[in-house]
Length: 426
Ligand code: KE4
Image: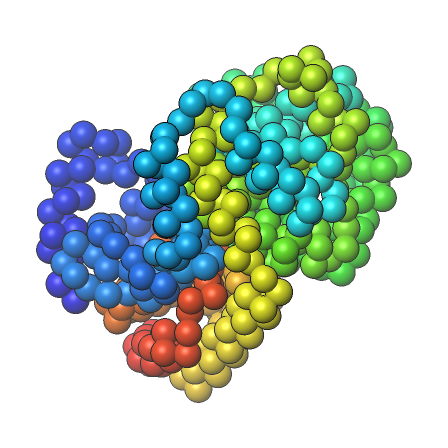
């Protein structure tokens, strides 16, 4: 596949942008080779600067659940843009979106809009610390919650891809207040609580981990965290930036029936434009300025373009959309497993509605250590074989894949045909 223009552009980009990209995971450092530069998207497809077509399983890292160029969403943004791009003042649309989020996610009584998932989790952590008066937080190894200092400790996603266990620049004094436990290990959490009784401000978790491949919670894990945090007076934060409005209308918490105290959101809630949100129990959210003392702010928070895109997207997320995405996910994963087996390739898969992870030469993946035992080199070779065949997977073994409602039978069959050839070459 001819990608000479992309290769020329990354060389040019590297002269003015660190690593040539504005977010590290886009640089293909984990899989090798040059990143692809894109110009447009349509439904499940992306088109690059050399006019190659790809079936897209990144979907802008999750937001494009309705597919690229979803007309009602684009039209809503264009109409808003023709009125104004922003005010720095309240708008009625922010109330409508807040009410829609609260309607879809029962655990959220009040919500604050921000501009990214990082801002959402950073603010939720500060709020939990302010509400409890405690400093310690607990996260899970391999989970990624954005790049704020307290959360760049044994994080996943691009940090993991680049092999940066704890980012330089994060003061030891801050990193020391972030505790880590293995994902899906309730006993380890109990042990940490016994070492720090009633001293932990919050637990923050991806209720389905999507930043070390895709790893669902084992039965009882989320329920156990819920009980332990209740007993300890610790705030339970579900980071649903990736899973929110993707796994169900009320994200992972709706799918698994466990209600956190706070939820962070991003990606889908912005319909492809920059947005994040955090919300939850009214007594906790009342601590946020100007209602309460915990300060949090943002020049472009609630920007009318992002609000228009997010609101229109949420309004199109019907039950039928989730049924269709679940069926497509099952069909894709089953097809990949069958073709891998037919070629003697050991492939472990994890998937939940609209999210999946692929792991080579391992049986089952339930935590970070399992992921690191998988054959990363084989994943990378599979990635490039699929890319050259016109299928765009996440450029890292430590990321999840995403499926939109626009991924139709033709796109899935194209993917499975490409996988057949890729497995044969592995
Ligand atoms: P942003 O600040 O990138 O909008 O969101 C941070 C974030 C928070 N929480 C979860 C569960 C997330 O997955 C993310 C961001 N996800 C990555 C993909 N694994 C974004 C891609 C990137 O870093 O370029």
